[in-house]
Length: 240
Image 1 (tube, rainbow, N blue to C red):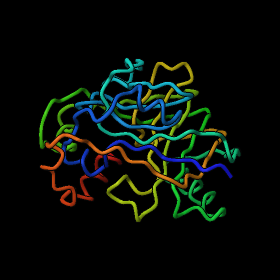
Image 2: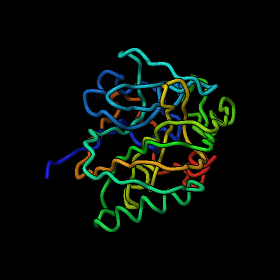
Image 3: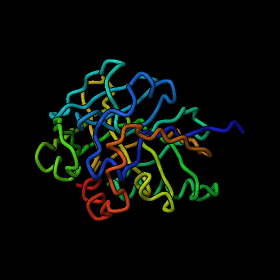
């Protein structure tokens, strides 16, 4: 089996504590993966990487493609190959979907591995968010989102959920469990997903056995005490 890697920029802890400076660029991210998610410098919108393209969800949920030199403080991407492909029935909410995805990886002994996933389908609703940028230093992600986050609802829409799974023991490096972003089929709408209802969908799922983390090189990064990142705040940011 081909060894696949997860390419990650910085850590979720550093993002949560407010390190939102550019660590690398969109162009470099796309050299390392064709599927994944993240954000942009100063938390300027939500990132969705799909089919080798990088998309930015703006504060109102509209989609643009950023320039290759756009800065990236945090992301996780991989090269999705469709190692496993299967259909899923109607899923009434995110809890049901996460449970089904976890069951699928558990039956292949994958709970201690990373995964990248793509789910194409028709959605009765997608409850999502994105945000406007806030240039700051040592201001927590939760504080930024409290100021600049906007939620929106997409209904009766075709599109794709893009996501990553990290096991519990990697807590802090990334969010344990499933983290999902949405992109509409016509590439005009998207964002970080809080909740959704799926009518039917097709899943592509790859197990990842290696991780490469690109840490910031500037001295400012070492002024952050990453272990102080609050688990409760991270969960609130993730779940809304």
